[in-house]
Length: 252
Image (cartoon, rainbow, N blue to C red; front, top):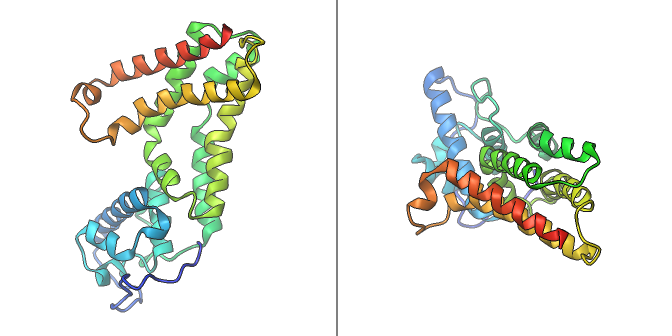
């Protein structure tokens, strides 16, 4: 984990940092609460700006209590990554220590690789044909489902990738890079000759952003009318239809 000098306002440990025996159920529940709080704080403020004190406050405990469960900001970030990728926390030794950036990235990369495969896109590429409306709607629906399921991982990556260079590499290569490359190859079969390579890249990215807003960002946008939040089926259908229509426009 990148080593940053503690901010002057950050609270340093005041409690003994040795391992303590605590009731298993209470420890597991509290660790889950801390992991959730860390996820919220890092996803909102990024790695650099999040302080241990922020996570303690979000959890509703003192900094001293927090350090009984995680011994550093790096350990808290590892907990957040474990949490959003749905890894078990029950067997972790307390206090959780920072395993290093490589171990944290391994957890993240493994999860992203497993969950960012879309058979609909692979099948469309394998067919050798230009996609039609039904094929593109199928791809759009698959993208929507993945982004909906993995939105908390993506929010965490989005907030922290510029603070941690290694994380930025994963974000660009594993989260965005693969599917954008595959979509570009597919749309090359449909796009009219008048579409330049930059225009195609922008159009594909814009189509994906339609899905991303409906699947993820509308859930965090404040002040939206209730109809934007209420019906998941209608949101998915609208998103995949707009995605497909936007890409079909490249045939002109």
